[in-house]
Length: 345
Ligand SMILES: [Zn+2]
Ligand SMILES: [Zn+2]
Image (cartoon, rainbow, N blue to C red; front, side, top):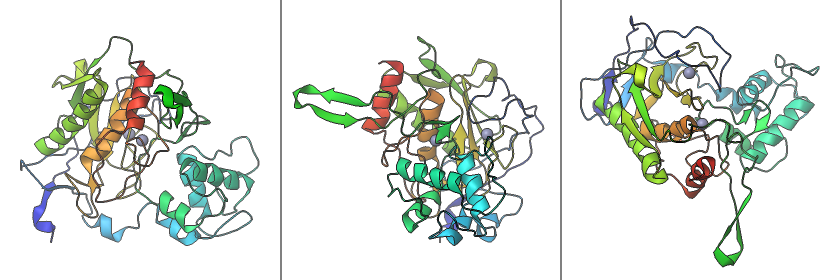
């Protein structure tokens, strides 16, 4: 029944030289890989209810297994187990920073549930406020299976979700301890002092005004909450601080997108400024079942553009995952405390 509401967006390879490779890569990345050409997202309608980004194989979303569907077979699995799909779990936990076999005897490339994997699952459970058992119970599986941001939870071994820069704050005379769950990497990735006006640039072939307006609203939320940053669109790439692009699959920055579901988007820390959406997602404007609200994802990714990492607070914008059909655009006290602490405002 929603089909009549869908706006079909055409995705055509770009012939334009890709200008987004302008700054050193920070997180997440493998340095200096060649950036592939951006996808063109265009629209011929002003107010779509949803934005259906078409792909070369239009039925991808229904015919292809979701990127995280391997998890369904792993229910109940724990240390010592051997089950097809565990290697996928290892890749998953590696991607988000939980598991790295580099300096040990273990391997990503087998289906053995070893000590390292046990520790990684426990860290994941701690970060997501789950029972810390090391067992892939149904709560853990359903958390892991949710669509999420591609930005890692643990960055170069630093668990951004448990490291508290400012562990406790005292509020008035009540002596109430409020634990801050927001995080950033020691304040080293932030916009320089005085740089409060940031210019954003849409990849030239994003012509949908609905997409642009949704992203603009997301920027405005951070502007209103901080009373510090202001954001303005520029049509001039050279003068931009932030860039917004839709990519599909491997797009050359070391963090490939994974088709419909799974990873929705990612963004880079200051002062890199790149925000990438997965063009294979079924994005919507507003809450539509089985669609991901574009503005909600944008608000989250802008947090990374400003220097925030992931939060353990489930209702915070900086929480890593978001369900389908949900609008989550209101910055929460945790997000606001985080950005204010980072910029000392
Ligand atoms: Zn994120
Ligand atoms: Zn990217």
